[in-house]
Amino acid sequence: MNAPVFHPELLDHRLPKTAQVYELLRSAIISLRLQPGDVISEKELCAQLDISRTPLREAVLQLANQKLITIKPNSSTSVSLIKLKDVIEGQIVRESIEYRTVRLAARFYEKDRIDPFTTLLMRQKFASEHRSVDEFYALDEEFHRIICECSGYPNLWRLLNGAKGQLDRVRRMAFPAQNQFAEVIEEHERIADAIRASDEEAAVEAMRVHIDSIYETLKVLSVKHPDFFAEDSATITNCDSLEDFKRLYA
Image: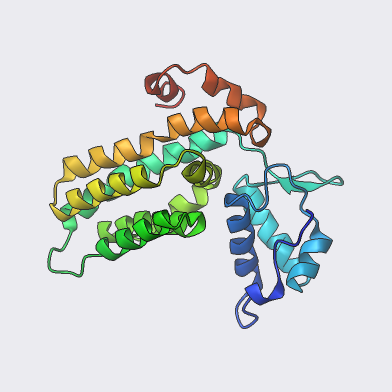
């Protein structure tokens, strides 16, 4: 760690510190402000946030359980490299949950309710036009959280969010690297249209196309940023098609 990543004003000292530190660290890792391989200095982070070691250690342990941080006892703590196997685990969980939630969202969508998608998609277009990657990614996450809410099972979002940390780093990296803004918005619009129309099959198919884009993303990013990836990422270069990639887990 070189330049300070955090400062005390980021914390609301009226609220529990561990949860806030966890969110700050996770966001910094996903956004690559803390990059794969970066050493996590307990002393520096405590100084930057003006906190004791306890909430930091608790947050680090949570992130280690999500494989976003690697702890080597009596050695060092660092941001984990991106392992293909961990990305695929996140993809498996994402497919299992999101195919189901988007189907249920279409089935139970209440047409007389305030449309939860229109304003969000407008804001995402605005973020795209201004190349605001952090805002665009946050709205992308909000879009998928709303689908869980519309499905009638909002707590599935917490389950999904805890399982897809490694996958999220790849997704977040892809927006500027592959200029995916317009493509993602178009896919979101197809998903939202299918949900509004209560067309379950169209909603699932639109979500499938949206989620399957991870294959091309991995192919591009593992070559463009090889230092961010663990050795097992070489496996993706041996996949000549989406079908080859899916054979790794489907």
